Amino acid sequence: MGFPKDERDADFFSFHLIENLVKYFVYHMHNLIYYEVNLLDEKSLKIEKIPITRTEVFEKMYTAIISGYFKPGDRLVERDLSHILGVSRTPIREVLRELERLNLVKSEPYKGVFVNIVTIKEANDIFVVRKNMEGLATRLCVENITEEILENLDKNLLSYREALKTNDVQRMLELDDDFHSIIYNATNNNILISMIHNLRTMISYFRVYSLPTRQKETYQEHEDVFRAIKSKDADLAEKAIQDHIAAFWVEVKHHINKANQANFNDHPSMCSK
Image (tube, rainbow, N blue to C red; front, side, top):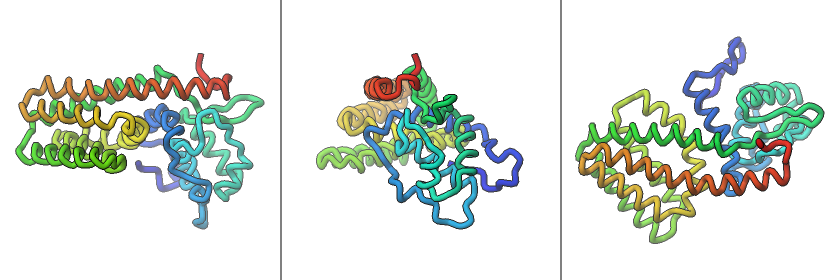
């Protein structure tokens, strides 16, 4: 994901449309993963480079939130953030304002700044968009199908079967990503490929959150998609990929409800009614 490089730009945090779309999606995604994934530790958040730019502070804070280092409902105290990142409070304060503008954090009068908590509706909105984008991509893949694409998908499924035998979750995550990538890249639609590429952060974290509990189901659903693509049935292929995402959503929704109940118990004022 790209971040602005020049602080002299008057619209320093005015990102491109797709980048803003991704940040909206990632906002809804970040609190679905924190029980399962923690990509950062305090040491990795420290900024060693001198001089320090606001861009670097923003990147560190942004990554810390979407990675689950800062959990939904956590209070973000300027003094503590200054110590963790190794910077003064001024850039921390500025970045918190930008994060609030992106709906990643919420400021409550007389209480402080907190990492936002997602609602079921917001997460559902993400999956509605994702389901339709991937449905379109799969349909276009069928229209552009070649023997090479079919061979790549077949090899991917073979490797997935091997990973299942050894319960290699990391390998299955990689193969899951590769399977979808083969389909996306077969669309020959640069706009769609670009949008989906920028959404991969969200998709990857959702997979990390859910795939370990539905490894065999994921393989079977991928096989259904492959068979539909191979038969050149665009309607069936679109339905297969959308059924795959719908099944994924059921699993994620279960964890959202569980996570939000825990958040409500810990941070009742932060949870949407």
